[in-house]
Image (spheres, protein in one colour):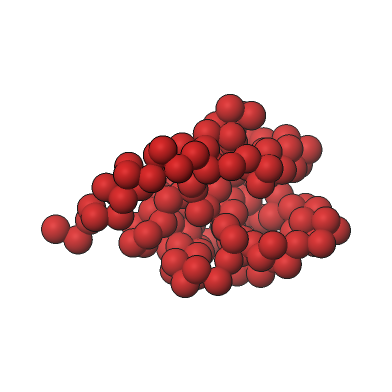
Length: 145
Ligand code: RB5
């Protein structure tokens, strides 16, 4: 499994933790930064991750800022991106089952490392339900007007 990950300063520590966690599980992880706690602008990192995931070279992406909100908004600016903020078991499952999210967003200031591990594992282990495909097709047609 190949995963890309990007974060702002609010997500840096959780990013470092998750990169190690996911690599230990044998996943390939491409880290798009930022690489420290120094303040940066989350729109730039969310958009960069969105562009990378839109190449279809990855299984999915992980976006982390303080809350996961800003960076998911930025990623969703890229055509073809379905970035979902997940924050409990239900949203981690439904983001895959219903939305087939290609980016999940987490909050470095709202989740513990252990909670984030569980959310990522739950998302990975869930399956998209094809009955929702027509809604994704509608989303794909939107934007750019
Ligand atoms: C940065 O201070 C903070 O606004 C950012 O990490 C994020 O939470 C935005 O949604």
